[in-house]
Length: 598
Ligand code: F6R
Image 1 (tube, protein in one colour):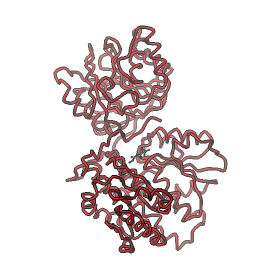
Image 2: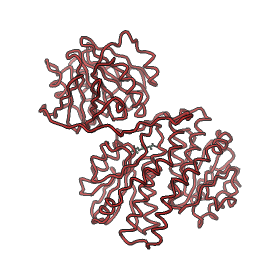
Image 3: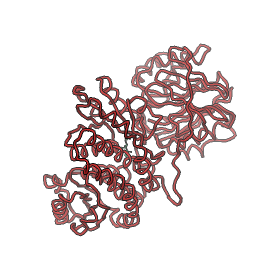
């Protein structure tokens, strides 16, 4: 987890690093820090809490220099305190190090250092790296870093500065992402491009086992064997930094409002011929992998393939996929879904599938990500950068790519009649427009949330694809507002959970399949009979069937497509509930947007 940035250039490094850290804050915001190397000594400031705390603590007269490293942390080892914040100094402040990843053998390394009289000042796994580099230093920083890296197990992207070399930053990568950026006013390392893309014209993504040495004028790349490597840059032009829309008070709100545009751009970019070629290959089964919202999007492919093509698929939470004995036989096509393309569990699951010989397609929002590079083919969602921690527009865009893919499979496998297929394709093309209609519900959802914001718990209910949509609605609410929430298949309610229905609790019913409205309406009635409140999201044509306290009508569409639309009122519901409960909707507690540790 965490975000790291490094700079060697002509500008004041502290300003550049703080800007980079603010862009990277979505990777973690438990603490942040910078180390500036002025050629003779290292300046260090680090603070628990948000970057504003760090900014306030920095003495601009002391933080002089045009070369440095910075870090924003999502705590894994050790609480979110000043002491556990990065960068870490080695003894006598000769080296400063920032780290993203987990050093799994840090206890053994701490013992090794302790036996040599070097003791840690923090509870982190990261601090050992600074001390090891110092321990191995005999006059050459590159060699010392390479030697230290040999001792490290686990995953790491590192940034290193020292008092020994003026204007030099090192970046190291093994299993945690790191890019190099080249700009007009200096060179950078960064966890991902969103941290530095405004100031860089070219970038290169480090491969595992590479180390870069940056100065303001020179970038040299080496393997862990110490041999210099050649590499070429790619252009950063066209990379899109999310900006808050006019008048929006948070990234999350503006990103919900961007759902229709993201859907339209994503459909337009669907590479139909490439997907036809891919799906015409030998495919015996489909297996999907993802985490959180991306997993919920994967479930929508499962529903679509089952309902539209009569084909059963397997969808896995990536971390669970890693625990199972997975059988790669039967020509599986594995589809990995991830907004960032950097989620460690997903990447590991893909590696496992590939090592079994499976072909892997990914659905991803970041073309320059580790996942896209790892996979055989990619469907890129066109959402621009998503800055709020909660996935909103990217979930909808993943869903629309996957639904389109299911239709392509229906077409080439002959699982659907031509007329029916044409109808579904037409309906899919209408989704951005229908999503825009759902955006108009913002004001109503805000009013609903003013009334239900004190709910003790909210149970999201649905059947089939609506149940999968409910899972996403529930995740969104708990992660943003901290209201206790679960998703249940509506029919399962009476098998236990009805016991929790009482005053102060709400059921949030999603019912978009006309064949299931009556059953779902009965579930709402059962909930209300026990004193709980009810909110129902239904098709316009079903309005009036549900005796809910609050009724939300979305435009009619084929029910396996409806999660693309129902997600919008649910996202507004989470957003406004969180807002009225005084929560930070862009940066919820205990979370980070990119989960780059397993
Ligand atoms: C929820 C959310 C997370 C992510 C999950 C996977 O709103 O954002 O559940 O969906 O951490 O992240 P990606 O999609 O980057 O692999």
